Length: 146
Image: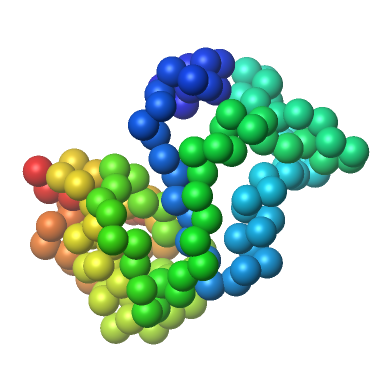
């Protein structure tokens, strides 16, 4: 599905991506969506068509950047109020925070998923404890029960 989205950017108009971080510098970088060529070396050719050269970088085309929102927010203290089909929470919470904070955040993330929604962690991460409303499908992938 993502491949067809990149070939036809206007087809899915209701898709929205929200990225949050406590670091304004990282959010500015995410909003800019420009990357060195080396960052795109494993990106399939048809997806690369969604990037435009800009100096020695490649920037995500405006039609793909438009539905992306960035918000400064510290996951330890606040969460977006919407519900999501997919939450990516990689390489921070379940790597660096203590187990009790990880468990509290995992429960809050699960609450923010729609029924059938997916929580995706980093490849070497796992939830610190079982969350009753989530079913583990892979070591790093959880789906909210319907």
